[in-house]
Length: 269
View 1 (tube, rainbow, N blue to C red):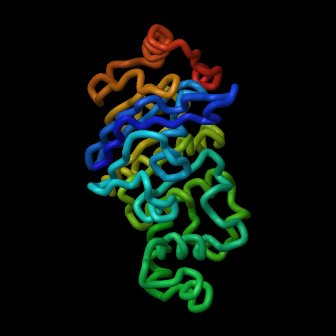
View 2 (cartoon, helix red, strand yellow):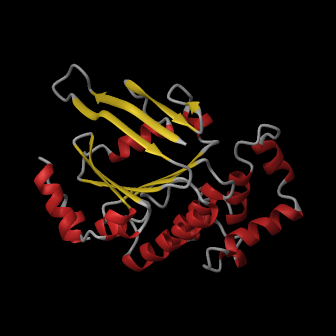
């Protein structure tokens, strides 16, 4: 389903700031896999997602998604297949547009038969589309289905992140990338958004990669866990191995195998 082979990228090559951000990374995901990735700052986690999504162009290696080689494909074309959430709840949605309008744009994303702005901004949503949006947003159980005309900029961080999650999955993506998407939320809200995430991923069998600094979260969700350090995959655990691990054991293994230190945030989480 997803094959990342010998992926490498160097930032600031040939300068004093040269850094090997990814060093010969290989990773395989089957359909429906939900992989969590942990590692210290600078381990290469977000860089890996940026290469998969097309934000960065890798120096070496290749990326195959659903049988198609995509490493030379432009980012906006990959976006038709890849849904992505970022740490900042303000990314991924338009604050001056309503909940309904944001969902409408996401719903029509990647539809080559229609021009998004021409059809949506001039004609708007059909009655059936509006009912579909209301039904979808009600699944979040946040009461947003009664606030479809509310501008997104008026929502809380948790509500906005949940909305962005729905926008990213309203047309089931081939691959979902979650880049610390609960890190900026308070613990109670983060727990709610994570429960919603797991529900959507499992119900729709979406192949997913999630970066998190929360070791407990990485152990609790998904069927595989990958540990990265210095641009390399340090360790990988399957579901059965993951279920036997504690946070303390993961920290001990990491310190024994890595020259990097876990961040204070990971330890506190």
